[in-house]
Amino acid sequence: MAQYSDEELLSAAREAAANAYAPYSSFPVGAAVWPGEGQPVFLGCNVENAAYGEAICAERNAVTTMVAQGIRQVDTVAVIGLKAHPCYPCGACRQVLREFGCRRVVVEGPDGRPVAHDFSELLPYSFGPDALSGV
Ligand code: THU
Image 1 (cartoon, rainbow, N blue to C red):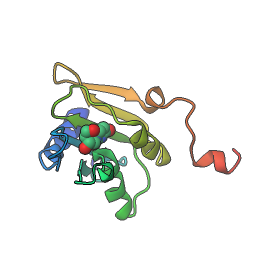
Image 2 (image 1 turned 135 degrees about the horizontal axis):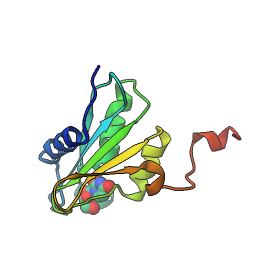
Image 3 (image 1 turned 90 degrees about the horizontal axis):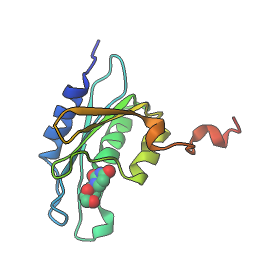
């Protein structure tokens, strides 16, 4: 069964960040999404565009890649910004991670070590699929 440590997830995110296409911001970001026990890790990097508003964040890139493989759950996401330690997911990415039940967020602390948060710390009182079914 595949089980990944926070260090391994951050390391995978760092590898993804190396592929970032960020010529406009020069702010490369990588994300590693782990769906849970027995599942592989899905990677994403930010992909910018000459039409600036069309940039895709690393986290959403990783999540949509995961969904395209038929998986719809997130246990942990690790995020690395090569120029910011820590680099937390933006608001839009938090909402997309919420959709798939993200439980934990791991970022790189200033000392290079993983810092883990419960997802509810990053998006308390969130709006999710359950709200639409009246639960
Ligand atoms: N970025 C991400 O990839 N993830 C985030 O959560 C924050 C921002 C990217 C978007 C853009 O390409 C660059 O970082 C600067 O905002």
